[in-house]
Image (cartoon, rainbow, N blue to C red):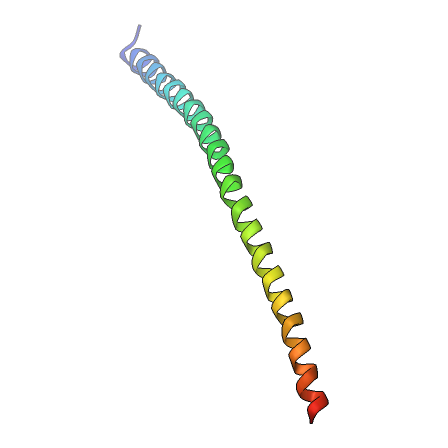
Length: 80
């Protein structure tokens, strides 16, 4: 074998090994990312439910307060 062939074979084996290792690392990284996104989604959904119910409570309170004010505004308008 010529020295050029040996260098080419060694460099191809080195590059192939690096590509395989990087591919395995990317697969593990994608799996971990999927788990992280799933856990984050659970956390966000558990936080959004109380926030949503609190928002609904405030909207109901605001609507009730505006109705309450409308009763008193009618009394003031009728007196004028």
